[in-house]
Image (cartoon, rainbow, N blue to C red; front, side, top):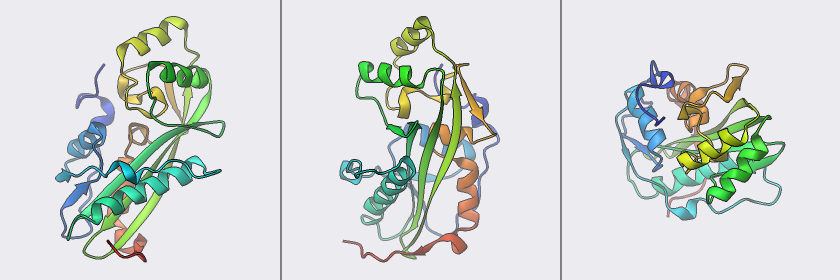
Length: 220
């Protein structure tokens, strides 16, 4: 099952007015984030951050710290290339018993991740950064969603790996892929698992004037 506008999680997404008169810039090449924003009704352009914005993990860095840092660096990278714009950046990882699971490198790596998650609860964290270039102010927040994955049979695992739907997805799975082996615990955000917590994003836009702080570093 491919990610499409027909999925329930794509319906009724909140859309808030932008906090500034700047145009919205998505600092990500993720098609899933673009689809979520489009489904909610936002107008935006896409300017992916450079690869250098993701510089690897720091020693003993937690999953929330990692996604917050990456989201900030991605936003800063794109903001430095624009005179105006409301830059939106995000980064998403899964975390299981403290181990951070990013995007799999290949099918073997995907299998290792899925076997690790099989039958276990785990967390998905998304760091979100909203950066006003004209105001030189930004806000960063991390949103957590807890998931339970059913125990995967060898047949289920093989079928999903063969589908290649794990490509480019943190933890080697997509909540939007139509599988019945993923359950959100405690009413967390479905769109956060996809890569952009749309409910919280709308709140951040509405409260940006109160939340945002001045950026202390100068643009290059």
